[in-house]
Image (cartoon, rainbow, N blue to C red):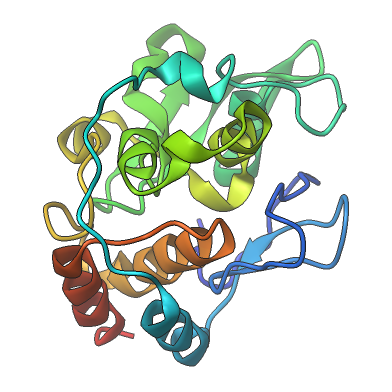
Length: 219
């Protein structure tokens, strides 16, 4: 499987970012365009990181996954839910049932580097991760958003990656100061995290900002 830094996605999925904003690690060309990670966004990411507000996290008061709407909506009206769209985008040798449902494929996990044969019968082996965790986003400003904006973040392909279940469970709701992927993916991970945070005008903790700066140093 080709590296995330240079590989275009396999399916068209719109990026539901706040109007007028782009992520540093994802290029978009308008509604319905195909987002793809690109190499060479370090300078943009560093600039955006410097513009992020540093704040102390708010409490988790009032948080639940349901605050971001139903999981895996059909955000692009293609008849397929977001989970299956991301699986189709990130896996190779994809096989589907009934147009949408991904029943098998091959994943090169970006977080730990493990190659995984995905089958729907063992679906938990491959999970869809929110690069910026929803619980963390809640504490860094999303609790003040409208439900529609929270649903956009939860289903934004720029904030989603198909990954191996084990590191995803370890990552959980942690920010960059508490969890980081394998070193070879840290540059892309930092660019994505910064890009999404910047586009949605979320804040970061001082520790997370320092960790993101360190990961950009691997670019």
